[in-house]
Image 1 (cartoon, rainbow, N blue to C red):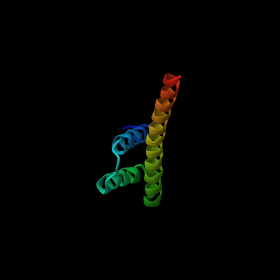
Image 2: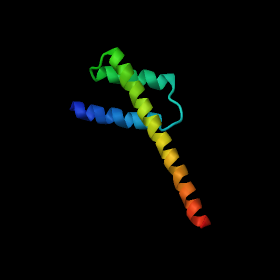
Image 3: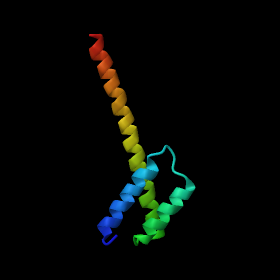
Image 4: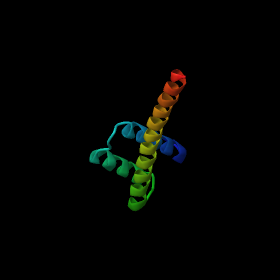
Amino acid sequence: MDSDRDRLVFLFDLFKIICSKHEVSDDEIDLLHSYVIGLAFSPTMAFNVILKSIETFEGEKKLTIILGLLRKSFNSVFLDV
């Protein structure tokens, strides 16, 4: 990886993979923490980046679930008419 942008894109992809499961393990958090520090973040900032990223991906999953439920609800309403 040659640039900061490449590293951040890789980090984003890594978060997508790790957060695709329902739970993030302690080992995965340790891996992410080491990688984020390697991107020149302080240990405290690295922890904050990880927490915010996990919250973002979990929120995205919740939104997807909610949208799916809304679609089902609207489809059933329109089918009942």
